Length: 241
Image (cartoon, rainbow, N blue to C red; front, side, top):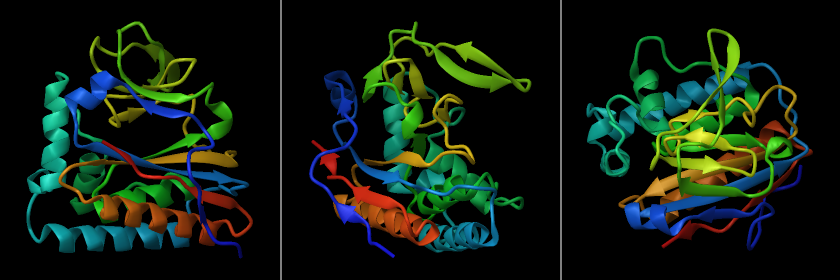
């Protein structure tokens, strides 16, 4: 089995606008790219990772609510800064953490989503996965104008919504891929059981140390390599100001 390798630069163009950097100067991210993955329905290995992640989270919080963790508090402040109510539209790490601590536990989606959700919960860090073959052009983190299309689902049907003006979004050349920073992923680029190439974004706010972001990215890359021995996994550089 090959090992994940670190690369300087990115195989996909990623950028953060000056407006977003000014809004949240403590923001940083790490990209992990993967080619030749084998996805499929949730399995026992992924379920075990999710259960272990929930235990690691409980030890980390030691009885506190997720929003009382300094890292999640920083994300809440960032959401408030662009006009979003963080108790109503939670960042993805907080939303998953609340589910991990609830009686129902974490959802099982598919092998790849379960894997990156486990890393997100264990490190209390937003992690997202995108199908590289569905991304059009580069990925940009910007403040929306409000006219960008966002493909999502409602009532079992695909619909097109639009972000609020000023909302922080990830987008590509075709439209928004994730609304309110990492609150809701679009249907167009999400990982399905047919996905073979993927981009994983791990997002951090100060005061989380950059070394902790690197450790989470390494754990994700190693878990991907173990789950998909024939895949080519590359860990990019930490991007932070």
